[in-house]
Image (cartoon, rainbow, N blue to C red; front, side):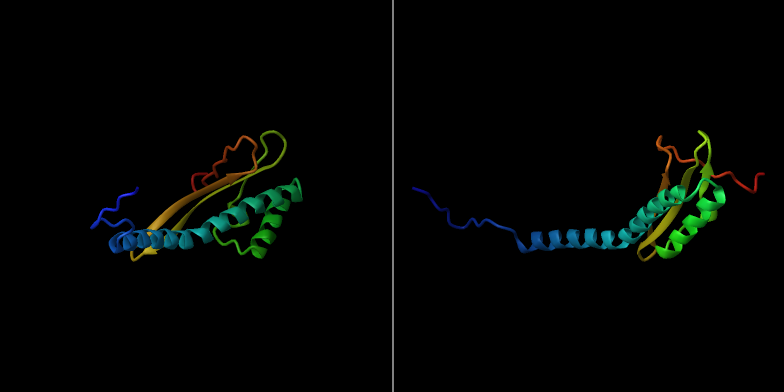
Length: 132
């Protein structure tokens, strides 16, 4: 037979419920603020893949990316920001940029995004035009 102890209750207290809801609310707020930056990053990655397939020339790649950026509302980088290299004879397209996402008040989240079509996964660095 099962014994029941009086005075001891099982379950979640009101304080515990409030803490859990606060944590879930904070996580949801973070996700809602970061998701647009991540979605734009995915659009850029898909855009460079489509631009690479558009043609072998640097200008062809830039024009194809510019069209894709206009359609997908990409504002973080432009076609001029792409790094196009030809190490193995085939054009490889890379990009890198920072996105600052305002969180609360004067607190922001800084995210470094980078991507490439190179199978090795190595992102080429853009040459500094001021140094040349």
